[in-house]
Picture 1 (cartoon, chains in turn orange, green):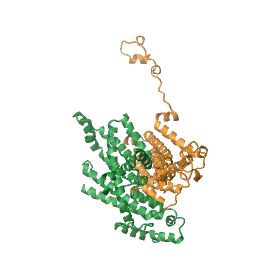
Picture 2 (spheres, rainbow over the protein chains, first blue to last red):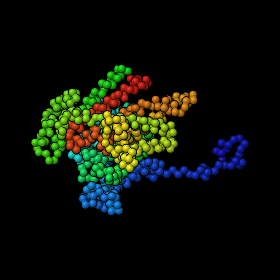
Picture 3 (cartoon, helix red, strand yellow):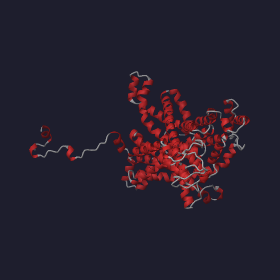
Length: 309
Length: 313
């Protein structure tokens, strides 16, 4: 017991001192859950948000299996029926089954949300990187972005949609254009602060070429804030899509989307509020889940940003 | 400071120029033939040509842009394809309801959100704080029109406390005017309140850790005066900034709110113009809103220099 005698006060021998039991006996072992499930356990917002998003994605994919009626089948004879065992969410003005339309409507919202998040991130990342590294381009690009940012995004998307035919692709394009300036600004800010880091100086001093610096040292560090931003863009894009469809500037009426269903229920909403409320509930829950996912990711991936907001 | 203000005012000119150039160029960069899209599916080739000429698409880009900028500087926003009325006149007729809605929303949102954020920061980590933060996430997630319909359903249809929809001009008296605006303002303000409350909380949390707050506590200042006098004043800059930036949310939301509550403002004008593909009207409204947004933020930036002597440029 050499180590014990070194730590013990003089005169105290190992014999008359109760040797502390190994730590494991007095302290219950900390249940450090590791791996994927442990991560979810420690981050309940990610777990809850992610689960709901996953359920919505599954619902969108398996829409034909989950519904009992064709979402576009017209049946004027049974229009505006109240919700019942036969028509779970009732029927709309044209006799279409609202439940089926809401389930299928998830497809448009999710496709638009995810596509805009990916497109806006990739384009914004490219513009932000160029702007952060190419000095002469920076002032021009940022003036253009400032100008675009001065146009409220929904109005910009509306103006774009007024000039094109309503289709899911054009909706994605319009919302992406409206979202790009904010992403570019974010990436540029990250790039400019990363450029001041000692390890980038070291890479420059070592003679690393600029493309390699961008690829190896800058890009990996933009991934975390970009992922968080992409989640929030996804949520914003889903809301914008529903607004565009709601005011008649979005997805064509033939494709059921949550915004469309609400637009069609608008005229009747005082007498048949359910046509508006069912898609509204699904939209709100989905956006809430995506936002929760974003908040959770921000807290784990980007603790500095989490402290600020 | 005067030099800063002059520089700041001058800096908005290129921004507004980019806005104008961008809004103008949309006609040219839009995929497909905008004249054909605007004319609709039943249009004859003559209709398409007529619209092309009225949009000026038959003339060279730069010539057209020069003439357009010159017209705007004179206050001429072009002529509506559908009604043949000047766009500036159509906007003028619809200005009051939108302006009323915005101002009421702004006052309502700020007077709810700032105290909410302050209280959340003062009671950080408690139930009240969590409630405010939960509300903030909810406010970001529930779209404006959903809040609008929900409020209208509960307070107008079920309880019959307030009118379901419509608008009464201010000239008809304050109470009829405000009565019609309360529900739309709450609906429109929900995102805005969430945003401001969140920033207020974050900014206050930072300030409350400062030494002078401890000094104020030590000298026996009351909690209320510490929060609202010492701390809030110093936390004001990010809050006021976000109030300015958030106006973009109000503008976008107004388009939808006016549809839900049948308010005959600029938002309704935009929606009607979309349905008729009346591009000159949309262009005029987008331009007006964007310039307003730029000017409001310019005003806020200048306000800082007047109220916060720490800001030096």
